[in-house]
Length: 199
Image (cartoon, rainbow, N blue to C red; front, side):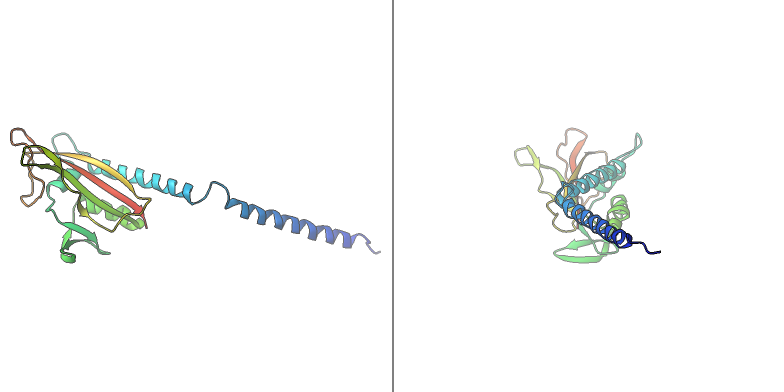
């Protein structure tokens, strides 16, 4: 017994498969035109970096009553040098040369290494503090790099935290941050900026 409709069923199956294939191709092509493009992805990535940076600075700036925060201790112990990541350590950058014998190992670098370096997130740490002028007024210092890893991209995010230093704090003698008011216990105010971007 022969089935005269077999060829018709085969032809219908091929036509249905072709229609399905065209639907899939159309769906893939139209996805590139929807709002789910790189700009939306960049906003999402920037938001993630912003939250991560805020969490890190908040954790470092937390202190029990009567104690300094880890971030404040790092600022107090800073020697004024700039450091760069050299694939294994944060080494001193001195007159355009990397001094691998002078490495920075503090609370800040430990957490930056554990989070940003391992995730491939580029980062700079910039300090700005008050400078006492000749007429006894104060002005912000030029931005000074504590950690420098290159120029940030256009999609970089900046997270900032202010640290108040007191005259009673144990400040590194070579620290470039100077006392702005000898009449009170206020020593200086430091703005710590964490700049993050994906490479």
